Length: 230
Length: 113
Image (cartoon, chains in turn purple, brown):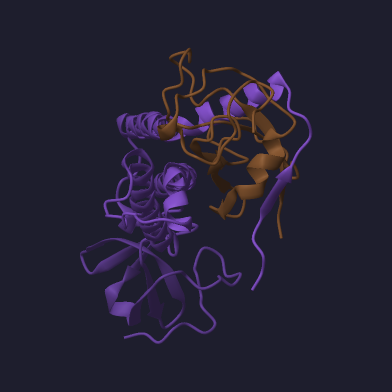
């Protein structure tokens, strides 16, 4: 069994010591209302921050996540999920700091050490509330950062490219965005301009995400090893 | 036994005699008398509750010592000398409205195991 703390006579006291003790007791007596008040102020201030963030809604940017190139769409989703989780944790901690935990506590009665701890209950609650306030502020800022990241990725992330069409003829392969089909001719938009191919010459056709690297054969896009065509 | 401030020093509680008047005083025997019978209860890693009797008025007094509080300059963590004041709730004559206890104060040294 370890011995607990003990007190022995200290140096001779002075009126300054009395004032210091009185000041400390005053601070301890009112620290819980102070931390509750501070938590209210932080909650209102952080709510103001989010009102400011909502002001971004006045500036229109891209809103369709499905247009983002992989993996930016998934990153936006992860950022929004992180923002939601952090926001939830932040609200719970800020409410905990401002109003206390919604639970009952055992009423300390009797004599001895338990009764002696009664005057310290408010101090312990103050320490818990300060910790909740700090966590609430940190999670709120994380929530805001994740939200801004999600919006920034949505606005400025690279766009998903439209599917390309790989067309194989007896003489060459062409790859590009389909523009139109008319009069038995298919027009593709390739990196070097529009190319028109007669459908009668087509021996293979397939959709690809990206065109294969071109070989040096003029404007046409021959493919050394094209994907399997249907 | 009579103290130098003229009060009767006795182990009996204040209910058996008139409360001493409020005076902001300290005496050399306050700290030894207090520490001889005080109970120290740890609250957490830093704070303790001192439960004992005021060496001047002999009223029960509970004193919370916490090195840190919200929005207050933290004390040095290694500080071990604690100024203590009487915090009893007995209505001592001549006590200002915003004060507590009988006015006695003394210093103790906290030694952690």
